[in-house]
Length: 635
Image (tube, rainbow, N blue to C red):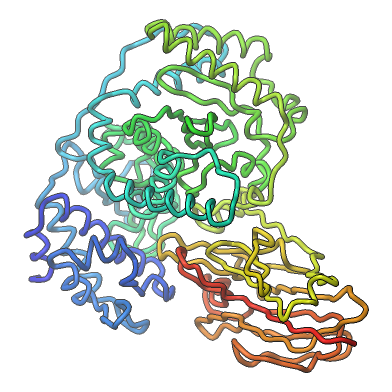
């Protein structure tokens, strides 16, 4: 097709990135055809504009797929049969295969004898590039007999991959460093202006800290792809894990290949779980292991001190040392989260036992950073004695540092001691650590018990004698800032951070951040069984000489697929239904208290939970989409 052929006229790196995004858009629609947000591409989205709309042939491909252009976005009609979209997807794949062939691994993978039936087929492409170069590490002889200590030794040895100059160069070549640095500089300046304007304490952060946040966001939103079950290689239908392969031909570059059977045509699609960083820079997909492995390499490629962190209860992530803050920052690329180490124990409800960090220079037991229950953790640590672990870590650390300069050794030892002092303080989880896992399918996360939402309650907005002397007071909330402000004639002040910190009662609601579409809003808890959710805010006057007069409100409500968001103002005597998003009422004039309640319900399919939304905003918005403004009167 002409629209697809136009892509070839771009530089090879532009072609690769644009075709990758187009395939991702097509796969998202094919895999979840009833999700309206996957059929809408906003022109305001920087990635869409820069990597598709501004690329020769990009718009032509979207229109050939069936997307229709409007002033603000490209939309694929919900009733589109997807025939053109699937055809364009096939053509782009053919073009990519013509540009870059596959070496050693055939397109049609033979089925294993112990699983084959007359209706079973196996097809797939393992994605190993023709220019694949295997990096060999020096061999080593194990120092320990204990299996757990042997495993620590192996992980430490593998951390040498992050120091390989070839891999670091390859990683740097795919990072849009200039754009990330520009974004980081803007964020840093914005923070500095706010500190100056609001006379806040100057935080100990620098450009590296902001660049790290930009790298995390780009890695999750634009670079890497999470895979629960790969789409069928024949019909692109949904698949389900079947078994692990024992076929040596499939396992040339990995020792673990999952086989996923199509629910429709019974095709077996292989999903290799690669550890090789050279391959991962090409495939750009996987689960937490592949994500953290690649992200750690990128951090080292940028010259940062970074460590690969392994939690024995089945998760991995990265730590990056912040020189400005003088501490290690927990970074989970799967979740796009930085410096919330208690999230796993508090939000995911993990029972932490051993958490070990590995780099090319050192190994460290960092368990104590990730738990607020140190005594309970100690009871669970039974792989070896604590003395054996400390001794083994000391030996491995000394061996790693033997080839370093004396000044580097002195620096690492000083930092090591500072970290040990940090571990002596048992920190308690803050509100932002009370968050469940977001990566992976909902059913998978529920089966692992890693979804956890907490709801604050019983907060009351109380106005005293000094408040009622104002001509008006406004309580306003921004989803983007996740912040309440109290506004008077003298200006705005930050009242509370976090949406649930300012509510009287809430059930089945959380703050949803859509990093791919750059949107944020309040919606129902991510659950197939949750039929509704509600939030109640309560306001009272404590001054006995005053009461409320007028109430002016503005509550942004957004719905999809026949969902509903209702709102009402009530006190002990009456209720008033708010039929519009903005309005004024004096029905409660003379009253001392009232409550505003919103109820979210309805929607269709598995995504019904997000079809009723409150306070929907752009992630970079400065607007306040929940506002309640009061005037007062005597009596």
